[in-house]
Image 1 (cartoon, each protein chain N blue to C red):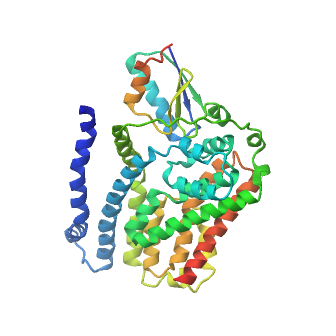
Image 2: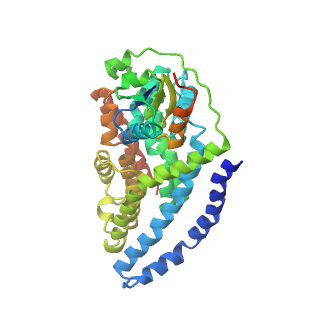
Image 3: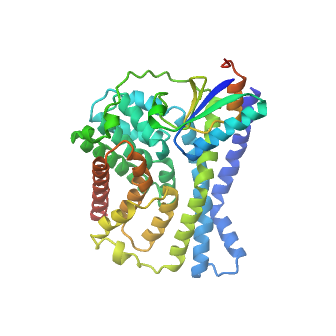
Length: 82
Length: 339
């Protein structure tokens, strides 16, 4: 079970990122809990200055752009699993 | 090594193609115009040539520059820029902030997190503003279009003047002590010690970041460029010579403030507005007036101000706009006087 947060308030890149994470998780058959963090105060608790940012199990793994598909696959396949 | 080649080899192949295309722009445009049933020297022919020559030229230049900037950007993340600016005082830091604004990737949609991130780290407000003025105004897209359509002198002038507006605008705002005009919740944000570890990218990752920028940026702005050059081509072919001289010329002093007033609420990326401005210039508009118009369109935009409203009070936003607009006004007047 992965806890994924996408940080960013309503920009089109943020929506693309959410969709990409959902797609990849479904493809790999991985169960995720996905949350969109849109409030600036909440975003700043992760110290992310350029959106979209991605937080996996509490750790910021990406900031500033739509991640590539292979990056997202890497997060799910990596050692972050709880 | 195999993965490395996957990026490197196509790039090495792309280089001669790029050079070949760039070298044959003129004959290519002439050839393409000849395919259409218009006389090359008629109004329609002139407009068509303008479009078929400038559009590929600008797109080629932009692809190359965005690729290189994508690589340079990997060294200048917002986090590193913040670490460089934190704890400095007004003055030299404004120059640094404005310059970093040029090379740090910036999207106005991230203006608020960036602003808060700077404030949290103890970057002085005036320094933050220098960054925020320079980042959207002086960027590689604007500079490439200026270089492609006007030549390197105008591009350098724009760079120098844009940086000056950002540096002095930030200094003035810093001296005015506008901290009390931040939204109350921003004033309450506790300062915190930021730690910055530079993540090292491999050469391959930097190259990939370059190609990614080309996909992102060129993929996004090309319609605006074509639209801008299309409007420019129309003006070029069909608007009479010196038509603009009467109301955007040097003698009409009021044209500079008017250009700024019209330009501020207008929102266009540099990509769309610069080809239009170039065409206006060719029809007798003064360079100072045109530059002022361009700067106010690119530097100040309604959507960005609305985004910044989350952290700045209306009073501070008005102050921000008036100071930047005055700087731009000054640039316009100085140019019209000197040239």
